Amino acid sequence: MKQTKQYLSYAAGAFGHDAFYATLSTYFMMFVTSQLFNTSNAGFNDKMIGWVTGLIVTLRIVEIIFDPVIGGIVDNTRTRWGKFKPWLVVAGLVSSVLLIAIFTDFGGLNVSHPVLYIVLFGIVFITLDAFYSFKDVAFWSMLPALSLDSRKREKFGTIARFGSTLGQQGVQIVVIPLVTFFSLAFVGSHAETKTGWFWFAVVIAVIAYLGALLTVWGTKEEDNIVRQNTEKAGIKEIFTAVAKNDQLMWQALSYFLFALAYVSTNSMLLYYFKYVMGAGDKFYLVGIFTAIEGIVAVAIFPTLSKFFSRRTIFLSGSIIMLIGYALFLVASNSLPLVLVAITLFFSPYPILFLVVLMTITDSVEYGQWKLGIRNESVTLSLRPLIDKLAGAFANGIVGIAAVAAGMTGAAKPEDITASGMQSFNLFMFYIPIVLIVISVIIYWFKVTLTEKKHAQIVVELEQRLHEEEAHKN
Image 1 (cartoon, rainbow, N blue to C red):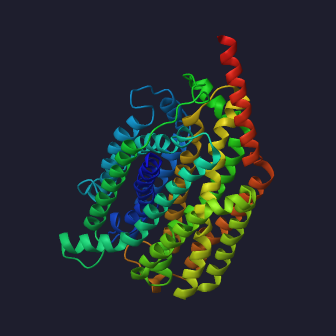
Image 2: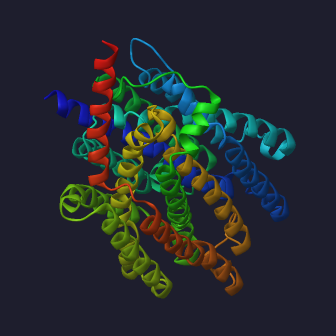
């Protein structure tokens, strides 16, 4: 019963966490390009979209150096509630409040005083991103603390991915209905409005924080001799732990390319439905399809992992995604074909995410075995750092693609030129295809930390630490 409580509590946290992430990384740019800058001056709109996009990308690139430090701060946290839970409570609250803030025009400053808006937006966004990072690192770096056993970790990771899939794809289902509902309820408009987007953000922020509180309430860190082999790390030790963990670094590079491809394409799906197919009202079908597919994919992962290695699963899943891309390119405006393409593109993703998550989690013990010091949060900080960096670049790509294709403001499908469609296809399909191919090559030839090798490392660590303990006594 206690184990079930932990699984469900961790899943609830993942549900809210990924609903938050999807809103920030995918739908905030839709708010920016369609509502925030929707004046009659197209040149002003495009310039301001460019400023916001560039600012997001720049801030997140600059912040990349701080995420391992954030991981180190979490690792160095010592409280009666453990080192993860305080950050979930505090950082979860601040990031949720600031998510709501960025879905506003700051009292009309976006038009009346655009320079002041950009300055204030930059301050709010970097603060939001910093606290989100603390919550993100704390949440996912709990995974190696919940169990040393790879199979148990897979169970925690699987149930967490189940929750995060429902959270992320649930947003796709409700985003347009909620925005439309709140627009009608508060403004009396049947079309999307800034007010509708604001209240949508409120709903997501509340859900994200409640999920964090449930994780705090229902989970418990495991105490054992391997986890006790920790010590407070300084800045030098933090970056050494990352840089000298070769398996972590190769996995990080492979995953960054993969995540950038996935998030870029996924972020432009709503644009595809609105401006290419002229079927924005059908976008909720994407959420329903991918939610079901995500549940099935996560459910079968434990079975797949029993019969196939992570390397085989990663290669096979990537090939299926590439077939989905190929179908997209010939689907045109056919809703059935587009939904099949989305199925092929999305279905492997939750499984491949779990493969990556398990490999990065196992690299905690690999780094401990290789360097002699255990760094849970520092190591696990790389995964959310990569997701944020990929999300930032994807935001930039979406902003560039939307402007280049003419998919901004009140544009309609008939306004999109052939040249605009070529630009859109380049960013949504062709570049991501190349990135996934490179990602697979790196994973196949450079990531050698298999399940069998990890089990051997854990045995060696336990023997080594028991011998050291006996020698001290």
